[in-house]
Image (cartoon, rainbow, N blue to C red):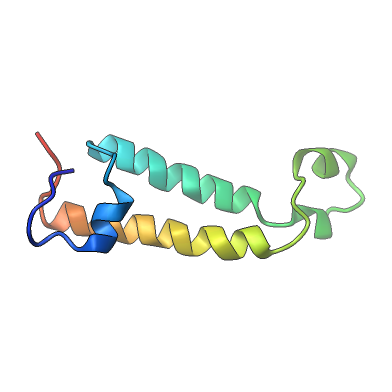
Length: 88
């Protein structure tokens, strides 16, 4: 990402080490997938053994942290897209 004088600090902090839009999309999608993983699926499928083995998180604290972060990454991606901040 190219930093300009108009780039807000919250956008710069998000993509300071990411240079391409593809890298930013990987960050957003991986954050979204991890957010879905962090849902405590064990509460609803407590009788299914493989769910207990695969989904180790059993409280909502990780989801409460990951959803705002994913939203922040997505908003930053939109800002950079609208202001043509990706290098060629």
